[in-house]
Image 1 (tube, helix red, strand yellow):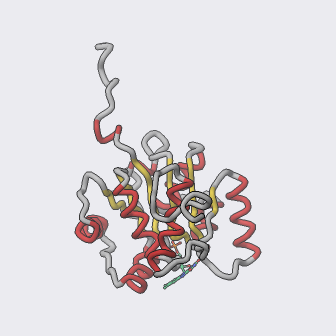
Image 2: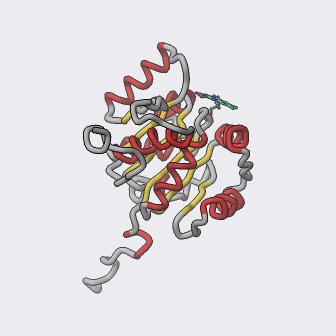
Length: 216
Ligand SMILES: Cc1cc2nc3c(=O)[nH]c(=O)nc-3n(C[C@H](O)[C@H](O)[C@H](O)COP(=O)(O)O)c2cc1C
């Protein structure tokens, strides 16, 4: 065997990658803004969109995405001015996607917005669609999983599910923006949440002033 064979990762494997899932909770603007920020931070984003998320996106943002991943990807590339090298939209049963296997999946995954239904499926390891499978892979590989959950009020079941996930090391971040940065617009509220998500994933951001530094 040639000792130098297959030792150099291809450029595409070396590029920073992250999985982002949009599910059917209210908060589509958080998901879109987060996608924009991840692309701006030079991540290759594997984007998984549930059927309900497409309904919410159309309702809240007026953005109608096709259920066909290739068409949805084209529309999003146009909307966000990015290229196919930066964004891959996966279908919900694309079991050959890198995110479906621990041997290839990015070590970081964000579900934003995350519905109570998806919380329940993830905590039980259902793996019945690519979002659930990707989350299960990140859990088994002991990667970083962050859920921006939106529901109000929370039922006991929601709280139990989130507690269980938190005990497994998952970051549960309710979509509950603060007001101490004196938001002037809805965009400021969106950025509050997106900034906290990026902070937790270790991704540099300057979206909102940092407590104790820029607000004295
Ligand atoms: C406009 C709209 C808003 C919704 N908002 C929420 C929400 O904030 N939280 C939630 O848990 N479910 C919400 N739902 C219900 C979920 O979309 C539904 O439970 C769905 O089955 C979740 O599936 P998914 O997790 O696979 O996307 C909403 C549905 C619609 C159409």
